[in-house]
Length: 508
Image 1 (tube, rainbow, N blue to C red):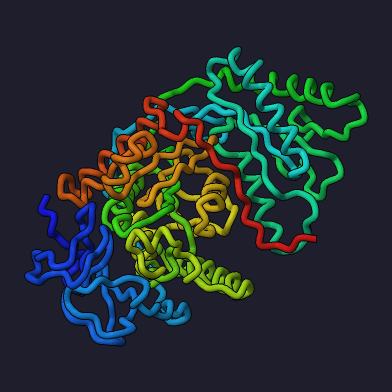
Image 2 (cartoon, rainbow, N blue to C red; image 1 turned 90 degrees about the vertical axis):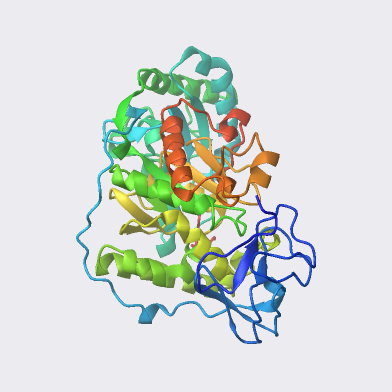
C-alpha cells in the first residue's frame, strides 16, 4: 500500500484521512499534490485545501463542523480547531411517503439453531437466572458457580448458566412513568431466545419489583421463582439446595434441546459500535451495514441503536423509514433523548470520548455519520422504545443510550440472538447470553489484538478487500457463529460484561 494516501470519502469532502499506520510526518507529499504542514496521526484529518475561519469542514459529504481559525492546505484538523454545528432541527425534517418495499430475496441461507415454541430461535442453549432485586446478586453468583461446578457437566447439551444480575428492584419509584424502562427491560431479557423459556428468578421477598412481574403467566405458579425470605428455608445452605433442585428441573428441559437447521430469517442481529475511530465509518460499520442488508434480504431482523450516535444523521435516516408513522416514532425518540440530556445539563457533544478523539473523530457529528453506516441501506420498518421487544422482520431502530453496556443490555431485551460489535480503539466487551462478534475497523488493532478481535475489516482501508467482499464474509461468519461452528473470542476467553439497565426514573 502507498503510505502517502489520504482517504477522501466523497467529492464534496475538503478533508482526507491519513491511512498510514504510523501517521504521516511533516513535509510528506501526498497524492493530492501537496505536503503536510505538520505531523498527522493515523486516522486523523488533513485539510485538502485552504479552509477559512468559519467555513464548513466536510467529511462523508456532510458538514461535521466549522473551522475556528484559518486552516492551510496540509494542516492537521482535530477537535481543537473545529466548532460543533447545531444538530438537525427535528420539526423541520420532512415526512417520507409510504414506500412499497421491494427487496431482492436472498434464499437458501441457513444456520443450526435451537427452535423455541414461540417461533424464535436461539444461537446458544443457556440457563438464565434472573433476579428481582440487586440484594440477591451475591447469592445468584454463588449459585451459578455451584451449578457450573456440580451440575452443568451432567447436561452436555447446555452451553452455560448465567446470572442476570442488575441494579434495580428496590429503593426506586416503582410506579413512576419512567420506571417502565428498566422493568420491561428485565421482563424482556427473560424471554431472550437463547434461554429457551427456562428462566429462573431469585428474589429476596421484600423488594418493590415482585419476581412475578418478571416471568410469563405460565411460570408464575410453577418452579421458576425462589424467595430467599421464604420461611421454609433454614439457613443459607438450605436455600442454595432448593435453588439447585429447581435448576436441575430446568437443566433437564434445556438438555433436550438440539440444534436444527433454521432459515437465516430467524436471525435477530444487534448492531453496535464502541471505542470508535475515524476508520469505523470507512470499514467496520459499512461492512456491517452490507451484512445487515443481506440479513434483511434473507428475511431476518437487524436492529441498530445509540440515539446520540444517530441524532446528527437523523436527516439521512428519516427518508429511509417505511412511512410517516415510523418516521414520527424515530423523531419522537430523538426528541425524548434531547429532553433527557437537557434535564442532566448535557447535550449530545458529551458522547465523544478521549479515545474517539485520539482515533481521529473530532466531533459527535463525524462520529454519527460513521455510526449510521452499520444500518446499511435497508428501509427502517419499526422503532422500539428502550426495553421493548422486536416486533418486525427487517431493519429496526431500537432506541438506547450509546453506552456499550446499556445498549447491549437493551438489545438483549429486544431479542437479539447474535451481537455484532464494531471497534476501532479496541474493547474486551462481551455478553455471556449471546455470541458477540468483534469487528476491528483497522488492521493495526486487529493484528495487535489478534486473540480478541474476530474479524478484521481494516483490509478495506488498505485496498485489499472491498466493502462488498467483507460484508459477505461477515454474513457468513454470523451464520457460522449462530450455528455454534465458530466460537467468538470473548466466549473463548470468558470475557463477559455485567448487564447495565437504563433507568431514567427516580431513586427513592
